[in-house]
Figure 1: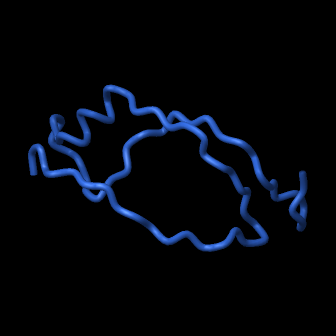
Figure 2: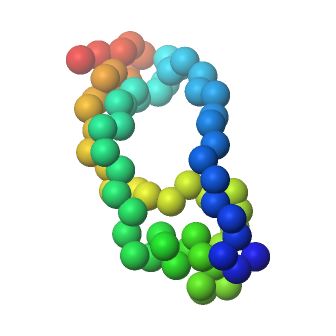
Figure 3: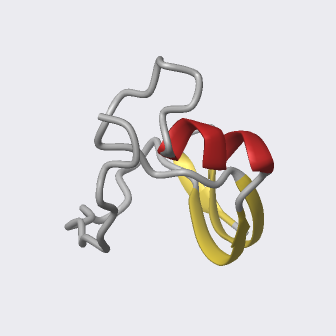
Length: 70
């Protein structure tokens, strides 16, 4: 699957549950290793993938001992 065509896609998110933290992602970075995985340069990519793990986010809700706090 080398250089598989990439395309945007959408996902449907559920509402945060009682044991979830809630964040609003403001920015997401992609490192050079992510590019290698997207292109399957290392021969071990698993598709579908969502590269990018360097996040800048705002904490919207925090799970604290049985209730949402903040």
